[in-house]
Image (cartoon, rainbow over all chains, first blue to last red; front, side, top):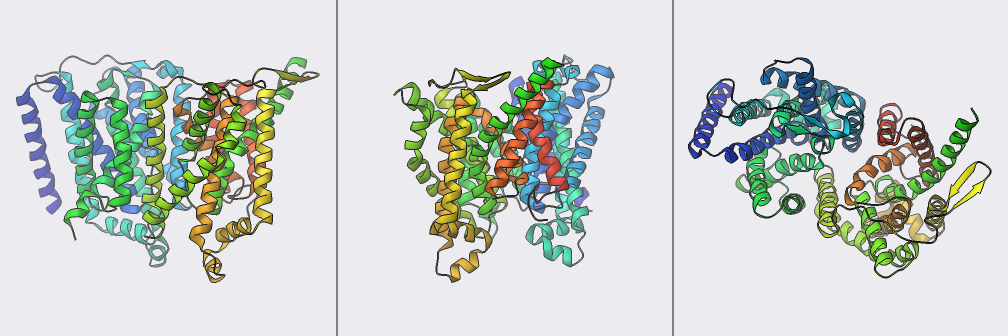
Length: 309
Length: 292
């Protein structure tokens, strides 16, 4: 019941956000807001695995780009498929990859899993780079429809709303998990995997659930990307900055709760949008790196940790 | 058939030479990850830093890149010592090395890369030395000095590290700390100090590895990432912390990559290392030579 109430509340916040963006009536607000929302989804998805169970995933870009490239393939083969359906397909594909990946490496120590995710990102990028159907290294062009299909307004407003809903969904999932048996199992794994295993927690199964869910949400976040950028090449789809941002945001916000990644994503995402416009994009990335290192050294519990004792 | 046999021979030879170079790139991680259990994924970034210091020494002052990298060893050693100190105080002593330690090194990797981009831009840089151009020829086999010199430097580096580890007190203490830090403490040696020295050595090796990297290929900041997978693939395959295992695994990978890029095209070669790593992790996580 509390979960339903939370989702309704989150939907109200989302509606208010959209209304405010409409009031400002500037296309840039939607473009910048889309990126921040996308990071809310990515950071929340990362945190389900990284924050709750303690397994660090460096391969965000791979799951994200797989979702994006699924859309490219669908766009080229099936002509008219609504965006939410494409996102579902992208999510399923990334989720299945996450499951397979987890099955191969999650029986090992956590560091091996992290290294393997890093490796997977490069394997996936090499495959896409060599796959001519999706444009290979030259990249793919996607023509964005000009108007939103469901309400009057520009297509970017539609993308914004879709991402807004996805972030409500993923935050609701993350919060529901945190207060469920599943969540307690996850934190048992994070605190002491051996002890958890010994007291009958099915650790491998729980870890696989976390990887699948986390990978799937990342894929869903990536699926609308081709329509947002209209030109997608492997170097930008698999950019390391996605991985850095999705690790930095939960760690800066706080990894123990659902709220941390949201705070981190809103703060860091907005900061980056401002810094990219006012200073330069390279400097804004440097800022993220410095904040990440600063926070892991000085504030291990993140911003949320400042307010809870 | 003759032609492809020549091709095969050349691919094998250059793969072995390349593998020797990969061993130098990996040896630092064999120390930090294999022996000290510190997952320094920022190591490739320090190698690129080494490439750029060699580049400056070469292009601005006209020094030989390898000589310059040897002169710069103490600077890299100190950098490693300082980094270990921060790591030790912030994570190891708090017993919180896993997630935050990893994120710390990931952040360092990213900061180094972006800083290099801001300072040098994304242009490819290369060095000039007498051995960059010419090749030796033995029948149909070509031996480019560009690969042969790094190979020899790499073997010298690993050989001297191996001697250091086997015959000096500190070297043996490093091996001991890898096996049982508690026992070392009981022998009245300070594990923190030993680890600091070992980590310093690991980063120092990046100076030489960076110099020979920029001899082999032009360098730009983001190629660090291509090496992360190679390094960890070799390190894991070689059985974590074994120098001879590292060299053999590096050569296997070098030959595999060279064959792939000769017969299927260079754009596939990054996937070889990672495919190898994934298979090793899935099938035999203790490495080719490790005891399972």
